[in-house]
Length: 124
Image (tube, rainbow, N blue to C red; front, side):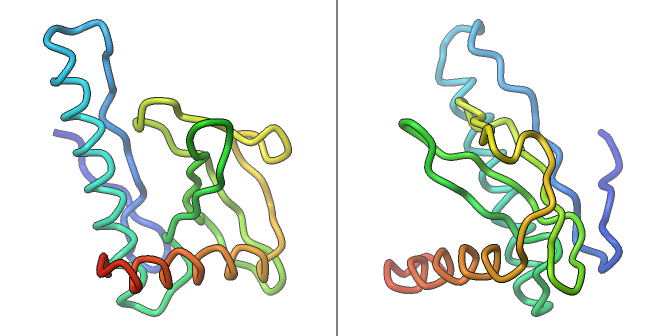
């Protein structure tokens, strides 16, 4: 098993387990996707409990799914994000690509919106 890598604040960096849709039964692939989501949620909770933006994730609607990015660096007015995979579709926004520097206030609004929805639906 690979040792978990961490960001400057001690929050783990997400590392996907590979999803193989050629294996039978297909439920095994879906199990890996579920494990990847659980890892992402665990990491997000660690960063949130520290009151940190660094290490949290954002998800943006794309086609019939979402593009998911982890916040890798936080600057005064911007954040650096990196696309994450291991969720099936693994969409990447054309405008952001695999990595991007994005307005910090916009990213904060996305994180707060997700937190509020989780709170409303009892998923906090």
